[in-house]
Image 1 (cartoon, one colour):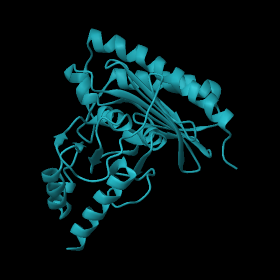
Image 2 (spheres, rainbow, N blue to C red; image 1 turned 30 degrees about the vertical axis):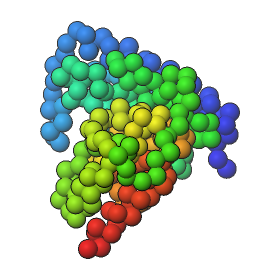
Image 3 (cartoon, one colour; image 1 turned 180 degrees about the vertical axis):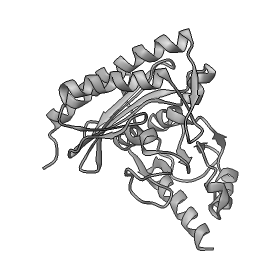
Amino acid sequence: MQPSPEFLDHALSIARAAAEAAAGVIRRYYHAGFEVEIKSDQTPVTVADREAEAAIKQVLRAAFPDHAYYGEEEGREGDSEFLWLIDPIDGTKSFVRGYPFFSTQIALMYRDELVLGVSHASEYGELAWARRGGGAWLDGTRLQVSGAADFTPQTAISFGNVKTLSRDARWQALAGMVQRCGRTRGYGDFLHYHLLARGSIDLVIESDLNILDIAPLVVILREAGAAVTDLDGCDIGLATTSLLAGPAELQARALREFRVALQG
């Protein structure tokens, strides 16, 4: 039995409160300074990341003490059909360089299915949220992806990290898409997903990511009408490392072109 809409609405309200709690921590350090450490994977981490994750969990655990949690800084804790996915500062590199392209990402997964998400770009000034069956929203305005169906001079594509993609035959397929579309950008992180969900761009491609980076955004995009898979066309799960998202017809076209390229 799936969680009821009433439960999801309640959980979504708690997740938004948790994101606001994290924003208070983040804002304090963003404007006051902090020290930066380098983790074993060569990515930065700060006291703000750790304290923001703790603030999020404090709010969530007060409401859902029996749920499991998977955070960017502390890993997985607990065992439950409900799993909260938390990235307290997605875009820490932006955070430490002092520009506002970072966000707090909070999602709930039930039996391996993503059912709600909150994407809070506190310093940029955008809050997006969605729950399964309830539509996607950005600052109170309902979101809807564009109607783009092909690569034309009106089509806009945004790229995130594409290092892995550049190493195989799909790189040339991507070049073909770029040559046919009208605009390419690399907005990255939360921003191009928010833009995609509201129809301002048409396709997002990333080949190097972590589920914690995108879990809430997957729910938001799907509720805004987007098709979302990894670059192989598989559903999104805890092991996901790539993403292809856009209006259904355009996303399917891009996926076919990538598959053809791999087949030689």
